[in-house]
Length: 239
Image (cartoon, rainbow, N blue to C red; front, side, top):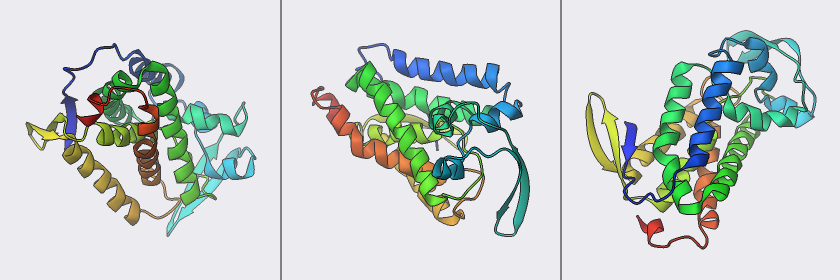
């Protein structure tokens, strides 16, 4: 199931923050990451759990072993404190399909939350979800030296908030080769269920998809969105 749109008939503001986040992600990917081919930048500004836990920047060739698999990665020195990478890694992606999928999800679901809680609150909410997602991944693999990057964790928080605020809102989704409409709780429920199952099956500290970050971001978004929505329209929050 791949969401491609939702009901925006009640949107009364332009989601400038959501558009800005999408724009920054695209610009970083095109200009700084050079479509994911700028290895020194990617490794210098991605988030490495062990660096965060020790406060020590890791540089040079490193050997990574997960189960019976062994790989080598070449870490590059971070010009700023390693904790800055909590932020920088949220605006980086590993490839065209990675950024396309993330930005589509953000485009579909982010505007509704910004419309409800406002521009500033939405910006803070988004960053909080991203930081929470990264923290969850670090907790699951504190000694990992595998770099983490992507907006998925923050966007997972947006999905968590959307599910709580708009559980019955219609979402247009592509299922196999046809388009249908389902309630948000179905579309997002299938997504988070998929993350939980694969997260359970993925070794802690393993590479690939950071399922712990997805789940952590989702939990942070679901748990905090009502705080950010305080004082906003109760009618809108029941959709």
